[in-house]
Length: 232
Image 1 (cartoon, helix red, strand yellow):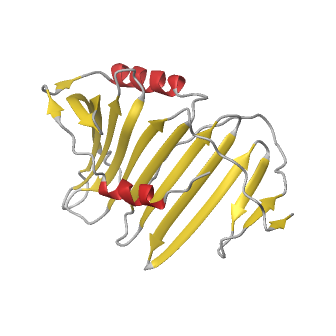
Image 2: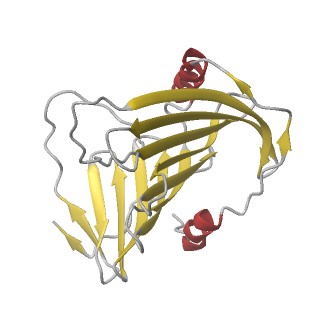
């Protein structure tokens, strides 16, 4: 198994420079929902390498995470988080029901099996939330726009770029506070999700969160168990 830290660093740089073709146009919510549903179904069970970078609402808060989903219920993650000048690295592997965790000294330990409760399921995703802390009898003004932006090249691959923009205006405040959430999706010709981004900001303030995720579908992804230093 190879753990390539430069891959994580490259996520924040986002070295791919999009090349745009065509013009944007409005689409319906149903069109974008259908694309996302089909992309989710297509990637089920496939070996996936997923790289995510984030910048937090607070200054100096960021992260880079590599997720790898291999065949036969194997999984590997490597995460580097930064906050208040402190960097925290975590890494783990799952082979079937067996889990391994890397310690701060670089050694691995084998974790005791987790007890299964209720049903089962698997998946991956990213999310965040931020309350506005605003209470008022005047409801906010809310609008949502769906766009097809056009064709773009990412790492030499032609993709179709779509965007959802949700805007909320809290008109009861003076001055008016506006929150904007933008979700972008880039689909390949095979309707596989190549890249997505999520941006949540309060206009004219420093409050802003952003995450960018890139996907690689590679049948050669293989995840093997490390040699634990302290078996449990």
